[in-house]
Amino acid sequence: MTAERSDPDLVEALAARDLSALSALYDRYGRVAYSLAYRILGEPEGAEDVVQDAFLAAWRGAGTFRRERGNARSWLLSIVHHRAVDLLRRKTAFRPAPLEAVGDRPADVDTAEEAAKNVEHRSVRDALQGLPEAQRRTIELAYFGGYTQSELAELMGVPLGTVKGRMRIGLQKMRRALVALR
Amino acid sequence: MTHVLDDLELYATGALPAEGSAAVAAHLERCAECRAAAAEIAEVVSLLPDVVPLRDPPPALRERILAAAAADLAREPRRSLPDLLRARLTSVAMPVAIGLVLLLGATTAMRVQESQAQLALYEEQLERISHANRSWYMEGVEPWAGMGGTLVVQSNDRRPFVLFHDLRPLPQGQMYAVWLIEPDGSWTRGTSFRADGNKYQLVDVGRELAGFDQCAVTVEASETGKRQGPIVMQSRIAPPSR
Ligand SMILES: [Zn+2]
Image 1 (cartoon, rainbow over the protein chains, first blue to last red):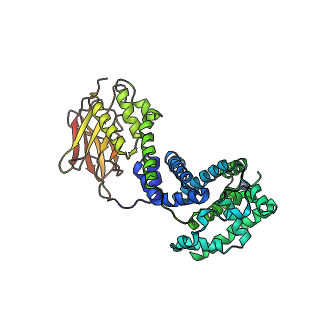
Image 2 (cartoon, rainbow over the protein chains, first blue to last red):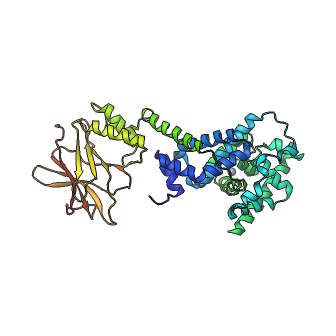
Image 3 (tube, helix red, strand yellow):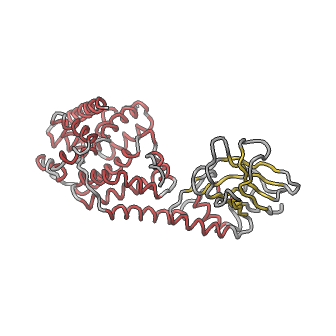
């Protein structure tokens, strides 16, 4: 057995077409990637497609990964996020988007107990939960719900400037909360 | 230049429509100020997946992804020719050499970490190239058995290289040296290098073969100077006549 390879090593090996690097990255981040895609799409088939597309995109585009733009995990998850939201928007191009339905996405149900298993995850969750309702929902609807800025404004019945402001302040607060924990 | 600071949160959370998102991305490419701000926001946003309840993907998903990636590898050799090596390996050995070169990638001090499929293809290509009468295999001598290298050169090519396999890493301060030996027994160093830890490693000899009739690899403590260390592998060579 060789020692566990670091993320940067794995991404470098990925660019060098090392298949074992891809399997190592999948074993490391496949689960959170799938969970994120599932959370956004609310169903398993789409989530699988998204994860497959995302890892293959990483495999094919590893040469363009730039370390200063973030770590391997956030790189992979941003690909997953992007593709999941894309797929969601294509599937729901004319969705009515009733506000009350949004919170009922299946993954919301067990979020608290599941995520609480991991202290690090809980701190992120606490930071999010600690936000005023309007800020938290704006962030969640955008990131997990795939709503665009104009949809957010309409959905929440506020001007675009308010959407931006809530998101900005919410993310700043989260950042401070998380930095304080380190 | 109009900054995009106002849109960075929307951008990071994916809430900008496609055009807006592309415009922000383009701006970030050339604006360090906005890029720094975007990185801070992206850092927080990148933690959001942590709040999601974890679910196990079906095991078949892993297999599908790896199979698709392996299929990519099998297709790749026919896609893009690394110009550098295309230039150095033209002529009779072309079909064979192309296969080898493509397996190796584009740079000269290249690293090859093959999948099993690549590995098999490599062995096959190496077998064929070794029949091309323009390559010579050097086998590791005790206690270096198991390592080896194929010296490859073409009649119209002045840049021979060695494709090594299984080179062992050396202790700090030591390195491998490739030597060319004249019929009168004088040694000339071609190059010095360190094992990069990969199974295969391609090293430029750094010298034409004309005038030499043997090639050898030794372990040395210095990048220059006369040969002092032990011989790791060696072969008689018959360079193309000029
Ligand atoms: Zn700017």
